[in-house]
Structure formats: structure tokens, C-alpha cells
Amino acid sequence: MQIPIVMPKPDLTALTGGYRKTPVMQIGADIYCDTQRIARELERIQPAPSLFPEQSVGLALALSSWSDKVFFEPGAGLAMGTNAEIPEPILEDRKAFFNFMDFDTLDDNLPHLYGQLRAQAAWGDRQLVGGRHYLLGDAPSWPDVLAYFVVWMARANIADVTPLFAAFQDMAEWEERLAAIGHGERSEMDAEEALAIARDSEAQTEVQVDGDDPLGLAPETAVTVAPDDYGIVPVAGELVRLTMDDIAIRRTDPRAGEVVVHFPRVGYRVDAAA
Ligand SMILES: N[C@@H](CCC(=O)N[C@@H](CS)C(=O)NCC(=O)O)C(=O)O
Image (cartoon, rainbow, N blue to C red):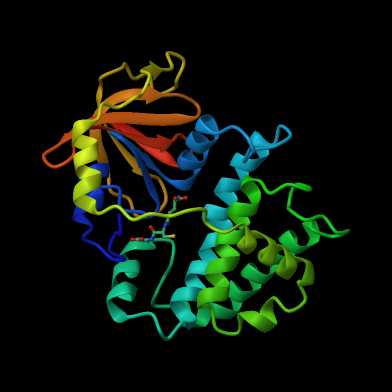
């Protein structure tokens, strides 16, 4: 399903209950929000080849927070501040969305942001020293995806990025290797069909609410779930899962029917509904 680049995104939010970010994965009536949650579900369904090889899962997931915040923020700031091609409606949408960025002082901040982006790209480049093909070794893994998406965004949007990254030859070759992996076979499905599949399916989610969780919530409690960083739109539903890894809530939508919406635990806030 194609989703609009700015709000409103009525077909997407019919599935998610309000979560607006990209990407979202739908499997029947299970809706997975956030790349981290999507990656873990893909790993569960298709464990080989692994996205988390050689017991790297803890490290790889910790790096999600790095790429989502520390690496992403200067990349997004520079994309907004230096790409004259970005249409005005997108800039206006992102001004409200990127609460970590002060658009009034963005121009003065650009040299700082360039410095932050370059120093973090250098980490990636150093990690490849000695002919290592991917960040954790000979096989691609989740940290490659995490680092690549910011570098890709930078190359596509940021003015003067070529000289900024010129010294990072190993990184440039790594980018080519990752791009060569491609996107598999893609086929389009329109929004009405996706919504019909949600309506006609039953969520395949096992109820699991951790009794030791510090939030002390019971299954079926009415809650809201929202990202704790930016794009903070609470999604309301009944608690189905609350573990150290994930959160899931059940909600009923006039167009999508009864769906279960999934989030990662880290980076998301759960509150009992008022
Ligand atoms: N933590 C989220 C971040 C997702 C995110 O910020 N996505 C950007 C696009 S790459 C977005 O949603 N931008 C606003 C929009 O598409 O409306 C994830 O890893 O999926």
C-alpha cells in the first residue's frame, strides 16, 4: 500500500490506530509498527539467513536507538536544512513532526550537524577496516541496515555530502554491497485490499503480559501506546502483550475491523487510559 508522504494518512492510520511513521508491516490482522519490531518479526518467521547472526541480537538492538536518534537527528536536520528541493508542504509537516529540531536556528546549526554526521559515519568506515565486508563481519546483519538508512538518506538529500564522506572509501564500497542486495520481488497491493485482508483475518498474537513488568498492567487493560521521541500520536487499545521485547494492543477500527497493533518495548511509552 502506498502511503502519503505527509499527514493525513487515513488508510495507514485505519490499520495502526494513529501511528503515522513509515514503515509499517501488515500480516493479516497483525500490524507491526517501527523497523525494530518489523525486523524481529521477520527474524521469527524466517530465521535463516539471520538478521542477528552470531549472537549479536543485544548489540544489534541497542544500535537501533543509536541510529534512530543520535545518527538520524543530524541526518534529518541537514536533509531539512540543505535540500532546496524539499517541497514546502513536506517541510511544514516535518516542522511539527521533528520535535528534536529547532527550525528557527537550523541554519546556524548546520556546521554542528555536519560535524556530528561526519564523525558518526567515520565509526562505520572504521568498523570496515581490514577488508571486513559488513559491520559485524562477513555477513550482512541488522546493524548494517541501521547504519545504511541514515547514510542513504544523507546521500539522497544533503548538499555537499560527497566531500563530507570523501575519506570514507571502505564505507562507500560497503554502501555498494548493501545496495546490491536489492529489494527482492515486489508486488503492489492497494489500500482497500489491505484493509479487507485485515477485516477478514484474525490476529495471530499470543497473549503475554509480564507480571514482573514495572508498569504492573494486567492483560486487557485499556492503554495508550506512543513513541517516546517524535511523531507522538497515542494509539488506544486493550493490552495483549507487554514484554521486555514488545508491546501489542487490540483495537477495533470501522474500516480495518479488529486488529492487533505491535510496537517494540524500548522507545515506546505505555499509559493506562485516562
Ligand atoms: N523509529 C521508527 C522511525 C521511523 C521514521 O521516523 N520514519 C520516517 C520516514 S523514514 C517518517 O515516518 N517520516 C514521516 C512520515 O513518513 O510521515 C522506525 O524505526 O521505524
